[in-house]
Image 1 (cartoon, rainbow, N blue to C red):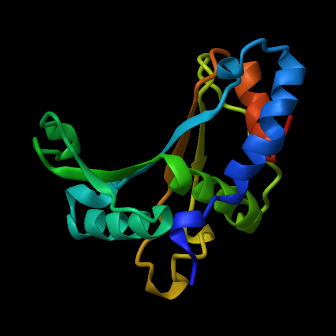
Image 2: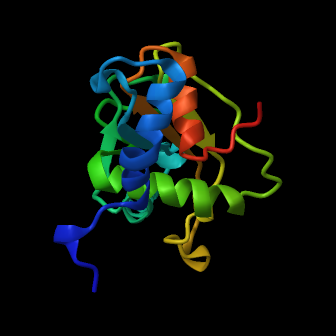
Length: 185
């Protein structure tokens, strides 16, 4: 049995022991509080089929909860859009915000287990927003070992957004590279 009181995720320990020192040397930070760190990871699944069948959003929510290790929250339409058959307050997707130990555990599983299971994987395209935040998409949720392939009705994609305390993209990319994020270029 895992002792929760003394448990520290592997990537958090690596960040504290090695990555912070490497970043401090690389960018010449004077203060330890300047060193970029991961703030949160947001997982999001939009379910386009929800307009026809609301059970698909519930299924996606359950799968995202399994992947994240905490309960997912449903997202609802803010406005009615007749062309898309969307009514106000209709469930359209699900999301989870991970912080702390769960965030580091998820990042570890994403980099070392899920991404290598993606078909024809050649690396992650660096997609930063200019403020040090990284976003990526997965076409299939079945690359995570928590999802039982036989029980999946429909393969859904998901967005993964990593929010850092960095002010620019170069520092954020260096931080994620130290976590062994497999960037293409």
